Length: 247
Image 1 (tube, rainbow, N blue to C red):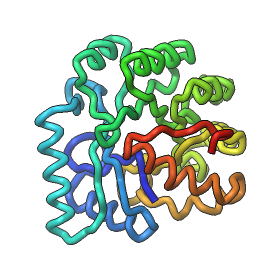
Image 2 (image 1 turned 120 degrees about the vertical axis):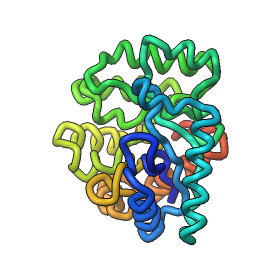
Image 3 (image 1 turned 45 degrees about the vertical axis):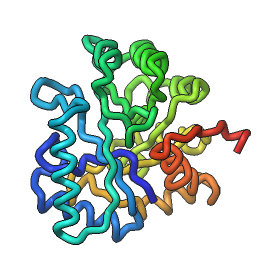
C-alpha cells in the first residue's frame, strides 16, 4: 500500500518529534502493509513552518532518508508537502513554483482552515488547477462546509480534483461529523485515495491495515484497491486518474 499523506519527517513540523518516533512510525507502516510513504510536512503555516520547496526542505528530507537507511528500515519515502492554501500568498507561491508537489508530480496536496467557506476553497483549488497542478484535497470530510453540504466535495470531484480521506476520520477517531461525512463520501464513490495523515506513533499512527474492515463495509474489493494502491501509484508516477466510468 502507498500512503500519500504522512507527517513522518522529524524536526520539520508538528509530526514526528524525534528520530526515534519517526523510525517507529516507519516500522509500523511496514508491518501494516505500507511500503511507500509520501512525506508531507505542513507547508505555509507560518514563518516558523514554511517548508517551501528548496534547499532547506531537501536537506531535511535527505537526512530522514539517510536515517532510515542507517537503521535498516526498508521503507520507500518520497518528497511532498501539505500546502495550507492561504489567500494572502497562494498565487505568489504558485507563480514562483515554491511548493513541493507529491513526488515532483503535478499533484499538490492542499489543506484549508477547517472553518473556511466552500467558495473560498473552490476558488483556491481552481487557482491551483489554473497553474497546471492537480489539487489533492486533504481530508475534505473534516471541513465544516463539506460536513454541512457533501455536494461541495462532489463538485470538486467533477472538476477532476482528487479527494483524499483520512484514516482517522473513517475509524471514528476525529469526531462524529468527520466520520459521517467521510463514510458518506466513501459510500458515494467519490474518494480517490485514503491516507494516514499520521503525526506520531501512538495516536495518529501510520499503517492502513486497520482501515480494511471499514473500507470493505462500504467498498467493493476493486474500489479498495483503487483507494490504497492503484490511485496513489498513479499520483506518485504523475499519471492521469481516469473518471470511474472509464476505468
